Length: 71
Image (cartoon, rainbow, N blue to C red; front, top):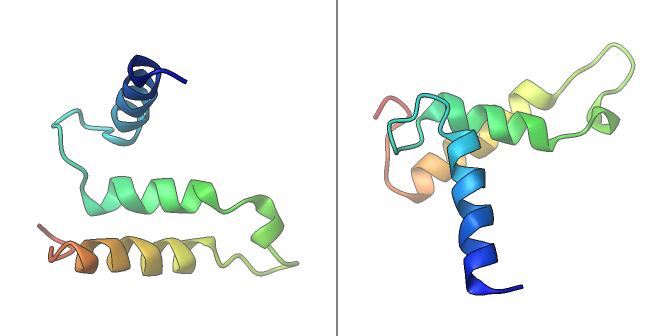
């Protein structure tokens, strides 16, 4: 893979996640990508932990970068 290929892939990835196009990720955008990363296999009969897991990881990411969830 060339550098330009990697840059293109990263650019496409960030443009997909940055739903409002403001050039920054907010909590909801990180929450949604976390939630999407959990496959349906995480879903047990009658139970769906994806929202809880996505909230945990999105909050963890924000905390790791020293940001409040409402920043």
